Image 1 (cartoon, protein in one colour):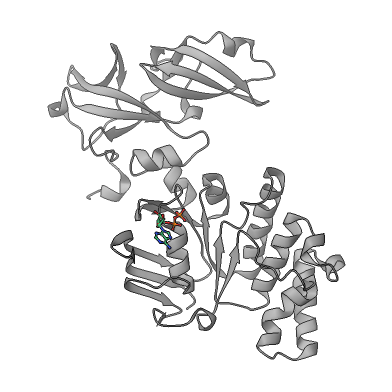
Image 2: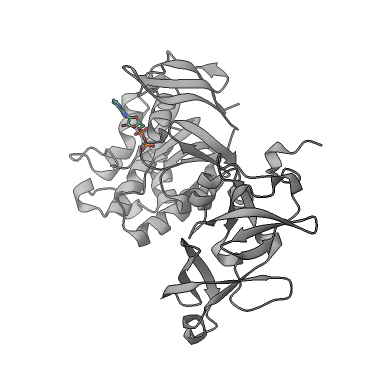
Length: 369
Ligand code: ADP
């Protein structure tokens, strides 16, 4: 099967280790996105899969075959880069056909394949043009066409949309998703943009400092981030995080935020013995209420700024010295939002993290039944 498996993969540049023993299994036909801040080792990992970087330790397996010593051209992969890497002196047709020509595919067969791919990508009218006479989006499509005609077992994408403007990026993102649905080729995609990761991925791999923090479907990561890093990375705007202290009252657990108490959801890993323990409360901007509700705790806030998006607005506030963002519905006006001085928190919308380690309490991955 055309899956990709990484086992204890390490990358060192001289004495400096930048990828620290990564384990990852990508299933056949799966679309997996590696996401994380700049410098966390995403590209290096992808380039080791492609064979463009030597693997310092561990193994990479493609289609059940260890490829550590296999040349890139023999790995049955096709890579799409941020800078397109097109031949400027060749036209679109010749660029797409280049790899086939080198492999001595017959002329008629090449024409058939190029026409088919041009059809899929909407490039039929541009076959005679050179890259310089194309828009950024069209160039990126040519780069994808060149990858598609090779019928690889795996597509590798390295920030392919980074050079495009915001509108085109959104459009191309949808095209890549459609293409994957149609072709069903195993794909590994690197980006620093969490929105791209959320919209494209079957599963997202969140990387930090050369290690994998969490792997899961977009909604798994959104609903159950394993730590404060993932919580702060996934979601737009990301999850708010407030420092709080555990407080026990009548055998119930509360979080105290500068004198205000919010009842905590029931947690197996946090008990009355944790009275006085420092924690981090996590709450998504869209889960905070701006109007009172039965059972919701009221916390006074200082409103800094209201950013109007249309149907929604972002309220930037200060809560106990922490920057805090609320996403609220406007229902066509923002006057009521400009007046907000209290926010309301429901217990069941809170996540609780350890202050020292940043790890989530009662994360599903730690459930012992
Ligand atoms: P990302 O793709 O997540 O932005 P990279 O994989 O490009 O990160 O880089 C990971 C780390 O490896 C960074 O700290 C980077 O400086 C380092 N690095 C990348 N290439 C080299 C190289 N050729 N020599 C030394 N260090 C490198």
